[in-house]
Length: 193
Image (tube, rainbow, N blue to C red; front, top):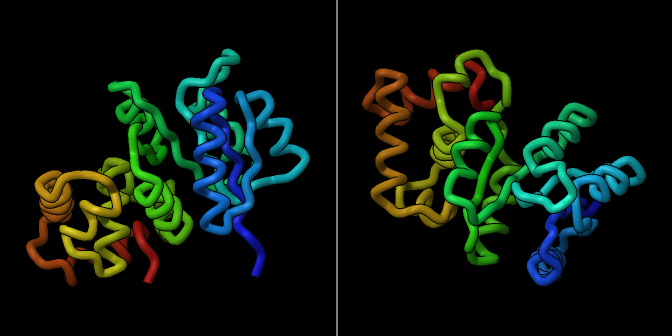
């Protein structure tokens, strides 16, 4: 079985080394880059399955722009933005990109990456604009059969926040039953059976 290749763009050397180590420990192949331009150069030589990028990079091109460029060139690539800045999640959500706030545990990062690699949510599916990125992530985990407690653990959020996301999704679909929710989500093309 081929290793999943992760392009890692992180401008802080210690963080980059730590993330690369954590990813390699989970049998991912890692292509480290210290900025967005280096990441693009590496990507053009060896396309990756997954982009893990800090939102704020030191070379004038940020992680959002990097992710959009890579997804434009190779739409099947999955991406995850990371940052410790308070406004970063909103910026990522505006562009429909998954986000994980720093600091996080390695297990949380690995869980998020595995979830995104296995997620069958279509980025531009009709009706997807009604759900936030986080709600789409919660919906994907509901589709996998995760309970609210498991969703909270896997996304690194509180139980109450996970329950709130789940409740908002149900409200947006106008349903009170997970089975009906999943049927509607499949019909709208938000998830695949």
